[in-house]
Image 1: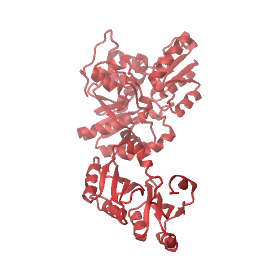
Image 2: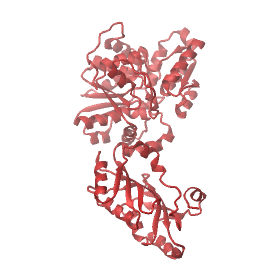
Image 3: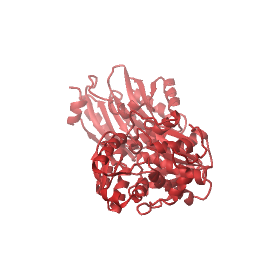
Length: 526
């Protein structure tokens, strides 16, 4: 949505004008600790979007985030007396590292208050830079209130992460670098928003120097305090914030940053978690670097902007504002990236509980229109004598295709529910398909290594004897050239020799798990 006005505001009692900020940015002291980060051409993403995409690599800063620019600029302007007493800040992690590094450079004490939800990676990084860490509250706003109390009791100088003209000016040096590094046409710059310091600095510089460039702010749809505030024409405090993009999880934006953004930011875009995960993957493909969720917001929004407006041949810059990624989050990011890009669709499929139904469903998948599709996931546990509910993932060709595929399955006689955008299904249900079943008699459990190629599953089904029944099936594509598959097969003891022959003819590596205690405790019918 567009703000009420895109004209430059004159200097008045409310705050500094873009010209004032331009002067402060040009005189900012950031390069004692920061580097001039590269502005890189994203070849693969540019080709996909049919636009020229530039990535401002703030993830390559010494603390892997842009935050040290504003933090150091603020601290470099403090008096000797203030530096002697020390500084304090509240931060979800990146600003904290900037303050800690700046304090070490200036030889002063740094007290850092961080939410308890801050990734351990960032906590350890702050401590490694000499910062004194206090963990308090569930969000930045909670940590901020506690930091104000410590400031008063210990006589420290508060270094605000965003709502301070010197901090804003430090962040504005990013825009100064972008315009210096790219001399040609530039249609828009996409900037993530937490409290608003980064976009306030970028917008002030761009609107003072090249006002024709659009400045587009980006937030996650569960932490959109700036977007809601601009719409309401006053600052709005969110009751809660999402923590996936913890670097932008701010309940209340700054007073000064709100004033600047209301007048100078051209548009706002909100993105969801899946879109952010897809953007992290896009950035990795072009750079071989992994940014944190907040660092990928700008790219996620850029993709959404191009799809909505159908632009071609334009030039966009995205600020990759941080790379302090918790390694353990990569599992979740990889899982959700394909759904975020809509390269994968998820379904609940109902098929008759009769021999041959599974094979017939796989044949329908193989006959879907378009290029060959892969089954990315298949979860099933026998539970009813008449019908079976299976959780299925499929690769897709185009965005929005899942509804069409669901209709195709229904036309072929299978019940189908599209779960591609169902958060419960994506986060939990896919892992909970199973349990004990009174129908699973004569069950043998085996782990197979399937070759990751078309026809591997159909070969398995074709070689099975008709009187054997699949009672459990779990498969998830992991991006390798082979797939790990768990299968329960109801094989009478009298068929042991035939079953052994089946495994030999199949030729896939396998391990029998029928005596595994985990299977016996949770899945095997007693």
